[in-house]
Length: 407
Image 1 (tube, rainbow, N blue to C red):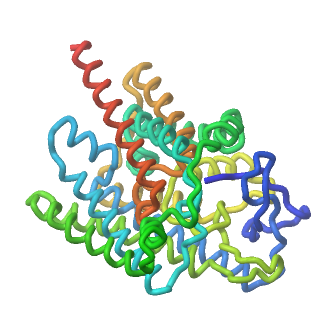
Image 2 (image 1 turned 120 degrees about the vertical axis):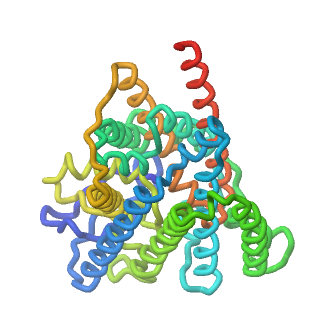
Image 3 (image 1 turned 60 degrees about the vertical axis):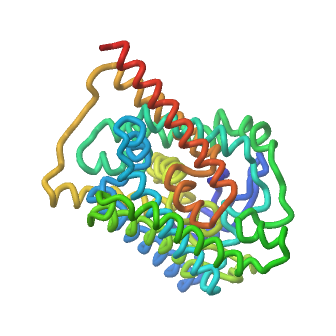
């Protein structure tokens, strides 16, 4: 999620260049320069990662449209209608992502210890408050950024405004107006552990039992407990929730494999350090849509600056938009839609800004933290998701009271 100003080493850096790590003025570890890609194999591998990210996005966009997958909608269905079908679909997606990702890690197929979700430092205040702001904002904006992509792909122009403001808000939190207060204020309040913050590692440190053993115990426990709850619902056992949730979870696993295995170099030929190609964080990444909205906006507005390049996050965002659009056109659901009135516009603008700033502060959105982060059994992701759910619940209750007064 963190980002720093980037400067190419020369004026002819290709758009698909590999970017080594660095630090910005706020002390954030990220790209400061783009390496000239003199190694054809490295360049080709980066392009393969980008292509894989676009394909993953295509699948994600189709799943969003066909299954109506939406975190805000899942919470709203429970609060307003008492229907937990979409909440079960979201939980199912998380369970599939957890089991798949932990299997990859446990079998030694991928090392995700460098992910932003697994470090020893838990900035609980940033995670909680950022999640709270994001959850509140996604209700006012009619859904999270991934849902906005699905709505835009079906012709909803309100979603276009939401995505633009989410990108702007994320830029302001990454390195703009809110960056220094975030880094020097909120991020400074943290709990530093003796090792990685994922649940198996934490349990291993406290018990002395191996992390792989705890990984198996936790996964089996979650599978048994959650499956029993999921299968109690006849509505959930329909094809759309089952396949939609499974697809989202499987695509998160695929994203971890692409960035953590396919795009991982144990030793970059020029820096001689480990590298994860074509990712903005210079670490393994899965699906997330707040920071990539900022990076996409930056790329589009600074396209002539050869230091700005495509990344895995941007590729998945564009793929999601393309996949959703193809699905909407195929199903003949594409319809132009705009704002009802100035009040509708104002709520969407405020909600989008809260999501952009809150998503960066919380290190992810309802997909980034809510599925990708939880797939690593990250303690910090639990804090962020709790904040998102609390913010969404509060906003839904506030909206219900506003509508009662209006009627």
